[in-house]
Length: 444
Image 1 (cartoon, rainbow, N blue to C red):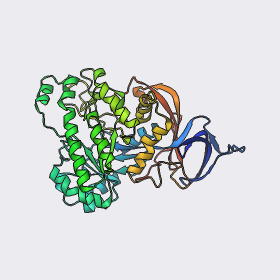
Image 2 (image 1 turned 90 degrees about the vertical axis):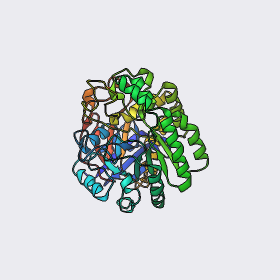
Image 3 (image 1 turned 180 degrees about the vertical axis):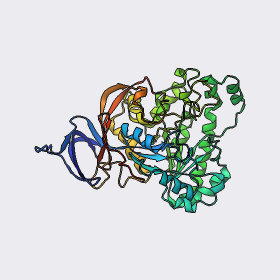
Image 4 (image 1 turned 30 degrees about the vertical axis):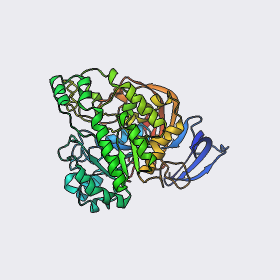
């Protein structure tokens, strides 16, 4: 069946929740009508549940090919579908080979075949070896370029220097593609020594990556953004100290965008117990007062959108048994719970469903150059859709988790917002807790 008709009393169209019927054919929204039909044949009526554009996560480490025992397209895109995400954008590191060449990009595309339950696009990587010759890689169809300003955790993906950035940014700017930066400049090694002396202490881990690392890196990137007018994107902002500099940069109309992660808004360092390495990420989850400032910056539009930075690893690499923060892989596994985590914390501060659409769909689509087909309910757009109940709560359990390993800091959390249906390219993939169609995703 190529067609689908779906009706909701609360359909998100043009930033309003209105009664609407969507007529979907061949994966596209063919027609929109604003009267509930009398003829209910082949009609899905979701009542008061929200019907809105599918969510897009711009920051996911899928790790395939090469480290599929960490995650993989099959499990990551299944988790995404269960969480109302209809598109992911994969990061260039953690896979083997890393996506820093045309051949590696082709290998990654080939690895997706028969495994995509939602759509998937790709960032390529900037490393010292390719900083002066990005032309072929930029022409492959990648959505942008990612770089690290500190060690990435993967030796095959070394961090860049200022010299590398100055060589690459003019070429990236010519294509009007974004350059995504992990902003940390590591200078203080005394605090790292303190962590090594007490490796199970979360506070020692927190202090081993101070806000100043991030603030200094962001200051440098704002300077280079202004110099080269290259679209510059700060990933997973965790230091509220940098908000003022970002405000000033945006006031100057620099092409600067910023994301934060759900975990920086939901958790705080005061509540993380020693040895709980499932909470380790970089930059680290900081103090409650810091994270409240991040939420305010998101609500105020200073932070543009939110991405999970889903970076899973097997329990042994996360040092779950030892609780050793110095050795544990740094990464939060939470892709499946992106929507309810953000909604749980943001709704308490007055955020609306319209904000969720902005932070997890419309702004991401625009940033990634996908806004001519995704991020809106509009005739001719892709029928990537989400149905959810923002008022319903659920308890996160390990048995619900669809990503490869049952390591997740949200287990045991009571979250608000339940995904009812996920529609990818016009096909219902996830429906009331069950997968009904699979392999409906495409590469972007």
